[in-house]
Length: 260
View (cartoon, one colour):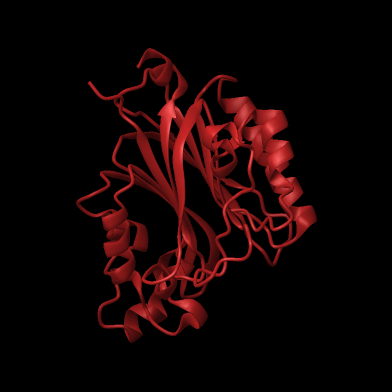
């Protein structure tokens, strides 16, 4: 009997538009996510509502983007509204094949003109007795604000999750200097998936821009999992959908790996 893996992905979807907002790509995005077929999806820059786009694009989804993307595939979803304006709002979302037992959007805004939140979901996977804590992040463009947001994230998780609880943090860290690793490793015992493959300790994958990635902006950090493999999905057709590449990883719980 094979041991089940958990397949996850993270993607900054650029509000459903291509690079430089030239084309609306939300339908192509939905098709690509379904082809990738992860169990849990962490999404950033998700358009919850935009009255202007709904009026100007005849095939704009009737509901929110996360509901449109999740339909008929991911049975559970959660959305954290971060940026609000007269004609709509956008934020982070998590889509899951498994039940979401609880969700909470933690406001970690540091600068008034740059609204940020951390979307936390407690997910019950069928092969685990423990809840898997999943957090979708989109951190600040500014180093000082990112540091505060990561410290707030660590403090929040230390308060609500047991020290040995399985944990996944994924999203757009905007962390081109790779300062997140030390804090998340030291305070939460986490490993970045590309560095965790085979215990090699390598650098995170390059994810921006999506045509030919140079910068390591997007990340997946895990605790309580063995990383079987991780991939960066860049170039066509991904680069036609968003300015960021998508990341994915196949994970195996440590206890399951030892029992296999």
